[in-house]
Length: 78
Image 1 (cartoon, rainbow, N blue to C red):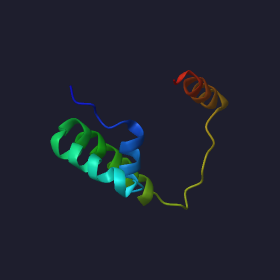
Image 2 (cartoon, one colour):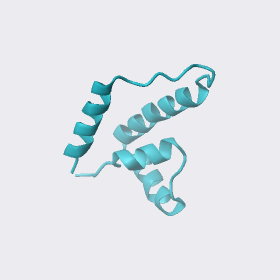
Image 3 (cartoon, one colour):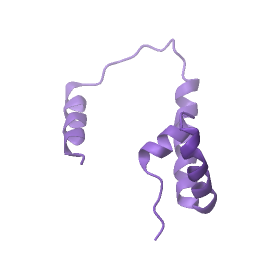
């Protein structure tokens, strides 16, 4: 069973901040794995949209219950 790239690897690739030594193995995997290519394409679309967003729009902080939910999710990760 082939192991997919993890979320961190895919995020680093989408942000173009990957380590050149790792990128060869990751690139080889992406050539074989349609699932990971699809995940990477989706992440790249998000990165492109975020980079294209207008910096003139005001930032609105999320409600406290959102931060509480994020903190709870993060504390449960292994």
